[in-house]
Length: 529
Image (cartoon, rainbow, N blue to C red; front, side, top):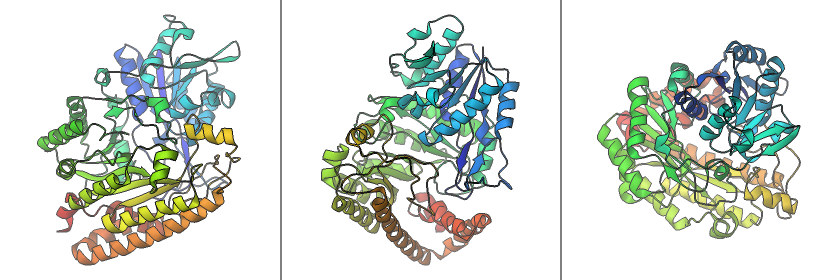
């Protein structure tokens, strides 16, 4: 068989950093490709997201930009590969309608070629891709085994009904097979098939101002990739649906496997910066220390961060010291609420706020930049308790320079939060949130939460007020810092000038996101001294 794996185009509300498109590697289908290829299948990969020219790109009537190959171009490119099976990845729930559009376009051109789709939203809401789109198969959960089994079934070697993790159509009816078993030994997976994608294209887009993640910028930092060293989460936060896709049991690659993976990227592709995307990098403190020790010993001269968030109660003082020595430019921790009752009884986070503050103090002492995720608007949370979160986040910024990232509770299908809201009638009609306008506003209509205590409109007003306060503090702190580091001024100006092509506001954002947010780490010490 010839299997074509595709990342489809998406829409963005802006072309300006940091709210513009993100072109990071399509890691999920790189893993799928290498597993299929190892089993003797012919695999081709088409990243339609990067098959575009951004210069002169105009918005549509809704003010959104089509990022990726135009639909006819995408279809003909896939057709030219002569596939016998097409697999689409859908990494985010917001992109699901556009993945369905891509599937429909290809199906119209290649009606006899089966199409499968996978990803977190496909796992949580597989019916969406059958009822709202023309997919033939949905692969739920980790896809490496299920997709390979599907290929074998299409080759006549298995029965579709016997494939765990597969949803499919049988005589016009949607059938959901039993859930797939999660991979126990991650080290059995071959390294992702980086040779199937134009690596330099991703690096070039990052250099042009489209990094896959927020990061401190330095010469060569555009050679950045995401890395996953562990899967699964044993915790039961009410808003999180990652357990559907990755399971409750935490599974980790060995440190040797991770270093081999990183060494390939450093030596063969010249990677300078890693985004470690694990949900639980710090869950096992012993493994974390082993990883940091090994990374320090390698002396590759690379940098890394944890943009997806890690536990704030698993970092010892010794580990924090190793973070800086190993090249960590910043960490993000998931705090969620500044009220302990909400953490314990509403979110079920199993996290102590004093532990968060202790970690923040250690990071400031160890000169490790720290960010934190916060969420407000849970059923059972009062407005006064939300104000506790605002106050806690503000205090963490003043005392420890912890940059807050605050959002509204989001009821994603498949999560306990969604089930609770659906049962109690808290879900709104589809609306377009106005939260974060001017910084990171949303472009997709979605359901939000409305209770007897609060409305989405009230939450948006509260969060906007909080964001203005935080912006003022960040500007003030950054101004003081620049005044005490005059040698930083040329670099600050360079960041500003680089962002001017997107406008003055975008240039100002670039100054903060590209440098001033990350002002304590050892790399900045070297640059500014």
